[in-house]
Length: 213
Image 1 (cartoon, rainbow, N blue to C red):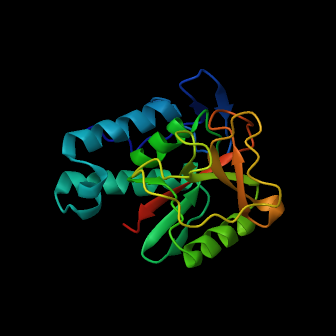
Image 2: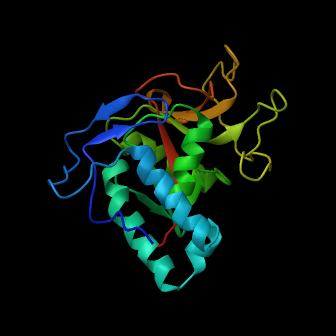
């Protein structure tokens, strides 16, 4: 199994060709290749495919699974803000934007999870507070879309209905095909509908992980 734990990257490049320089990331020395974000994500996904799905990653005890967990644990702080631990789950908000909700879901899968799913009022309150207390974020993508049937909000991963919908006043308005669910700090962390594609380099996304570490 290829190990990416020993080398990190100073330049992040999306599959769409945009390059983001982040001076907070440690640069590799002369003997270590520079990795981009897509490379890291693709490598983690490939290793998971070689082992199993993320359920196996969460439950497995094999040495290769444990090695992959160690790599994920080491990389998470570079790409995500400090986590929220709630109800045996870990939630993380990205430090970088997403080009589409599908891309954001791929990133979450690579780290052993999925876009954060709000299943009850306690979880919703916890995630609202998480967004409100995380610096340098405003709009945060979470799981939920009405792309299939307008006005019927379902989780992308399971197809199940989103049980908690707490909209900003006047929302959802579906202005310009806004089919994805977000939490908006400016409005107290309440829900808003926004496009599923790229909107702003300031937008972020939230992943939900089993609390592995």
